[in-house]
Amino acid sequence: MNRIRFVFALAALLLWAPAESQTAEPQRSSLPSRELAPAQLLAELRKGGYILYFRHVATDFNQNDERMKSFEDCTNQRNLIDRGRADARAAAATIRHLGIPVERVLASPFCRTVETAQLLFGRAEKMQEVRGGPSAPADAERYAALRRILATPISSGANLAVVSHGNPFYSVAGPPFLAEGEAAVIRPLGADFQVIARIPVDRWDALASAARN
Image 1 (cartoon, rainbow, N blue to C red):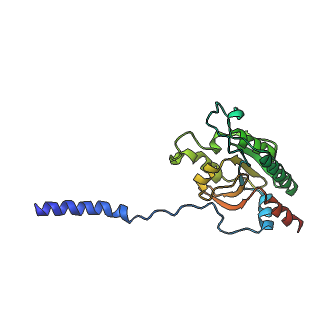
Image 2 (cartoon, rainbow, N blue to C red):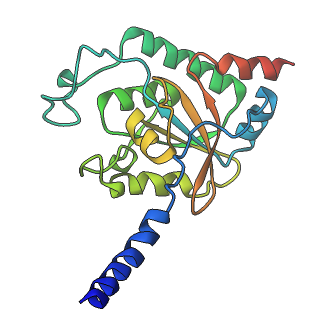
Image 3 (cartoon, one colour):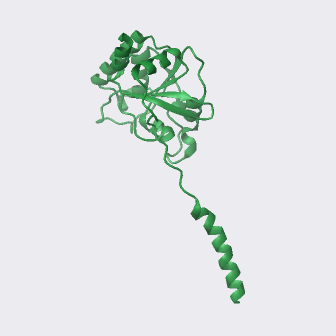
């Protein structure tokens, strides 16, 4: 009997030990591993081959999306405020002035993201995939399509713009959250992607200054 107990105890120990010895993977961070000088970042963006992921600009947090009936039902969504619109127009003017080429503009179909895209680039290609699927937030597959978009290489000579929300970016790239209007500059790597810079909505002037020097 003692021998049988010993065999069961040993089997349980062998089954338990590998799982216990595994160490948790470190949480991914969306902060760049090193900060690029504005002149270097501007040169890269002008060269193309990057993805500019924007979180929509400032919104009215007294509003929410709970009663919306469709993506076109702007009245029952959280919408942009005038300050956000002004920020987007100012960033758009600087991006045009700097000659940063943007070919496609993908936008989450919510009113605040489509409007942000139109203010920034004058166009928006609505795409459900850039905001995530309908499954629960804990489902790792919810943002699989967005992850593929951010990892797919972009031809040099132009950049891809994605205008979406804070949660999708946080889920695929890690903390910290993008502020409203902030952009992440992403280098697609095929199987993965790398955040090389983050540009708050009021810091495009730093690139403009670099262009003048």
